[in-house]
Amino acid sequence: MRNIVNEAGEIVAKATRDGTLVGGHHRIAMEVSQGQKLFWEDTGGPVNPGGFFRHPVSSLRHTA
Figure (cartoon, one colour):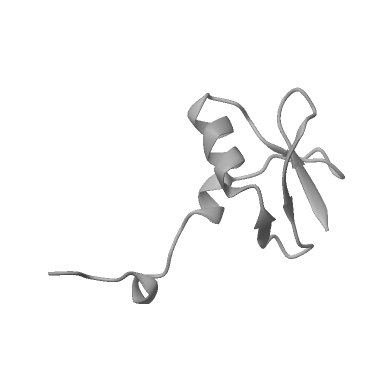
């Protein structure tokens, strides 16, 4: 497991080693909406939050 932290170093989410978000979806959305940058705690590298919120077209439901 890897932690995702904000600019203040607070843990905002957890992800698996391959980058699959396990928890913290709402917290990530809140941090990004406030203009905060997110980082991997173990490497200090930037996190692209857009990668967590993309959905394949086949998973979208269409209603009439």
